[in-house]
Picture 1 (tube, rainbow, N blue to C red):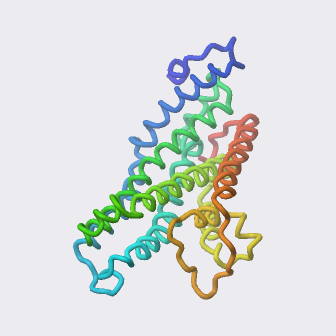
Picture 2 (picture 1 turned 90 degrees about the vertical axis):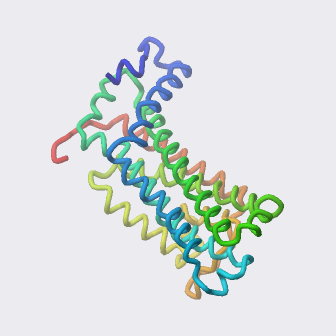
Length: 285
């Protein structure tokens, strides 16, 4: 039973220590779902796709100038990371996990068990969000680091050893990991609230995907109304968006990182306000 697992004492409902214990209990319940439920099965192919692609690229290396020149590998990987991993796989992976945190419970007709438990709904939001965040960070950090290492060491093993142990390789890898973690933080918050507000979250999810993809065409003011703008400002190797792109100065890290964290906090606050007034209706699900 959920109530037993949460193990709350209603007489201390305002205690921070109680909320912390409740959050940890919810986190323990939810993280199993995010890693081992039937819905989680889709997440592994999404996260594993770049690893397979990079392994295939290392085995069947194209005979091109970029792939023969070790100095060009950073540009090639930056294109793969920005176009495939960050903009698509991390986006849809976070969408799949975060939208199902509450929407999946409604479809399964199980959300009322949480609502009947003596636990603050804001605590439920935080616990569920953290569970989804941990799942996406773990899987897509493996995706980011694994794909980069397979790509480099699979094509230029000796040069890559020097690059990562004595050169700029490790700092670039850590920078990519940082961007991936921030992407999971921002996108998970966005799609958690999408799953709360919309009965069919697919359409708003696709609209958000389109908005993120056309970011390079938007005027400077609108660019900043997206997650991808701040993430692109942090990647260690910049890529050109093409001749149609509207040029804008990257937002410095000391602004980008707090902005994404502040945005996440505001979204979670709104989710907490919404769920306090939320009534469960399984009709039509």
